[in-house]
Image (tube, rainbow, N blue to C red):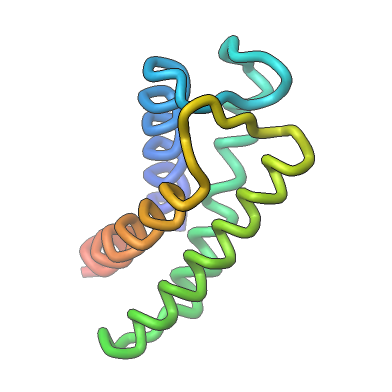
Length: 118
């Protein structure tokens, strides 16, 4: 669990720095400036999604596809709430990009989890 926590946090922060800070597609909090608070939240939020995702993940690939779609919908809805309440501000990013991203990242998280288990 610790390996997953560290890896997911690292990926989240790296991707957000790349897309949000360098490409200015979105920013967190009320300012486009990089803040310690936003990074600190990133250390906890993504792993808190990844751990239940992996804990209840079906073993069969045929069951994993609808499972990951449901999680992508849930994660996209959660992201929409952060935009709605003003924590996340899009400047070039679209919500549907996030849905596609989640559909791509969940199989990678699954593979990494299965890889680290063996």
